[in-house]
Length: 587
Image 1: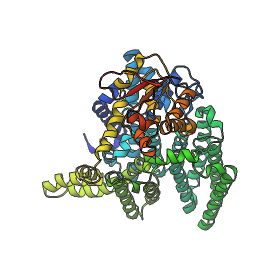
Image 2: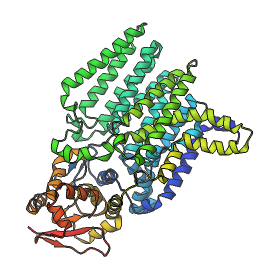
Image 3: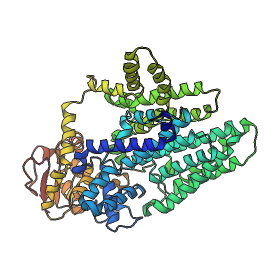
Image 4: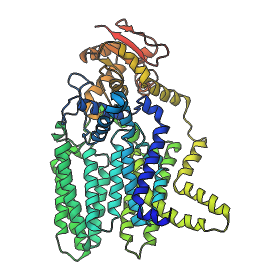
């Protein structure tokens, strides 16, 4: 193979690399595929959403009727991410049968956005660094541990597709061609917002950067116009095609009429700004600030309910549940064993982007590098708001990492000493990709997980396993009162219905479960009767149960844990070694 082939046929080689990596991950995680090990509640709910649609539930009806029956639970997602999962299932079903088609579909589906992200990152470094630099982007993405988790088999929630959109946003910001760059940023932002609002701050920052390019250089007007028109038009189309019936309400947690109006108005303002022929930079800056201020003021006036928490939950639900969600906490509240592997890559990437911007200060690529540097700095700052920003921050660090490696590695490879050429290159790549830090942290005795944490993790994994839950299918279909975090897994693995899942629009059902387990026994019985539950299913030592016991000593669940079982609960035998406990409720 000649070096020129890596440039001329780069897309072919990137796709080959993606297929190879995807095959490796499928082989590595085949046990999870075999046992349908959807460990995250959102992955389980996504699968139920796809199942319900394929079984005849309406396209715009996203309620999950097997939780909190008969009314069901309102899920705020869109169906956009359901499409590849359903498509893979229908494609594989004639060859593998329904059971294995589903397992293969949820194993393969998360690898599709990884391929999209790999192509986008390769495009970015080819534009910013060098045409032959794309293999480094592929290699460095494999060192982004938090990002890769979003692309693993069975991780069918929407985060992988949103990261793929983010990667194309970077490619658009780095594009020297104005119309194409504006189109890429606008379209990727619109797709991300259609999927969900998790990356709304990044979409806003991308729009601000495109606007700043126009402020700095009036010649960027075409980029701004195409971006504004694409963002508004594609968001509107995404809403019409994918918004659920429930998302036509004036809510703040999805692409509803609230955010759609803001996005369309913002896009229209940017198109209007781009049409102005103003030569003075200061005037363009003032006009940009006025447009942004007017949009913010109108949003605050029309939708004041969205100025606080977008979830719109009650104080009690926030205090007892939402405020305690681990991924919504800032990075600095985490142990060092968690902090270092997440933050090292983004810091290296930011330093590399800053250096590349300074190095390109007299070349046309400086504008693209400045845009990517601002975006990377914003991602690092977001880590100090919520740890869930880690995958995005690591993804955005890749161009900066590649820029540093493109300087260091060629120098090492031309060194006279073979030890420096080989060993030095390996060490440099491990350090620049932050892989070295992850390897070192695993071996350091810092913040080691205590025995109690290990017990909790083991209990959650065992209780959610397919063999443990499918043993319940020998019983006739019933409503089982169980933990909030076990509800989505229960309805995936069995034919039974549950009460609640960890979804903020259903605060009453979540609070009912909390009140039932933490209150007196008679209160539990009354709440269970109201929900039509005929069985009580528990998972001892699950993380959620430790919260019940800590917050409410002497409460219903704490009494159960101490074998103080009321007379109206009759034990139901489960297979030997089952991690679950089951009782029949008498009324």
